[in-house]
Length: 397
Image (cartoon, rainbow, N blue to C red; front, side):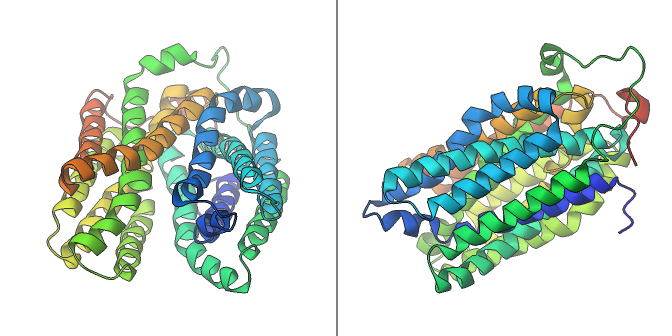
């Protein structure tokens, strides 16, 4: 595969595909397995929340681990933790055991996410970060589309089959990652005298501030209100079968996946600033359009528009984080991950409450405001495209 990117980015993209497939495989069975312990809907939903909350809580501890042991080691251990906890969870004897093991899986997931994204941003030079982030995100999108279908087949075999499939896939991917990433990690030339930027300086950087708000908006909408409110909107307002939700999400994901490569090139050649300004507005229009859709075809069209904007929102902010951090520390990545996770956790709760109290446009509206806020903050970013010398990094080939 000739991509112009280091081998590590291709390996990380394959790993992200594997992780996303496994996560998608688990989605159809997690609540059902939890209810096999004779608990209610709230307790079954808490299993999913426990994973997300553990990711959020443990993310600050990942950066010191990355700085001490290296990204590849932390990535591998994190994947093994998720694999082991998932396999053991299938053998749980009680709901409490299952809940605790899912929480442990969230800790491993935080280790993987932060270390993998740090590798994505530090293995390449500044002018390649958009394309690298796009390829990495593409792995997740493709895996997310394939996972639920595989999970449905495995669930027909047994309720625990998806657990063991996910555990085995992660274990294999972890071994492959450790082996193939060993020669391509931080092998780069640092400009003499160029020290890592203190996090307080990164936090004051306009690029990083815009990226944080954009990440919050993406987490709130892409992983939050869109996934929680659209299925209800399709069934209760548009009066369509739930299968149409899957069709609409698939169309949106396909559009986003097809545009990831062009988005990465745009971010690297035209700039992070125009990509973040425009995509925030496009995503806001798309998500508001979803809430106002009068029929299923308009809803699909608005989700496709949102998917188009998300291709840029998934690449430009990540590249901006790498630019602001100088590509040499995991702390900014950990905080960026935390903010995105916080949006994914709060989005469904706040959006759902607002939809109950007012209307669907109100429920989606807060997320749209966050997206527009990210666009406004991006106006403060410096124009142009970073060069290889901007952070003293010479990418490993």
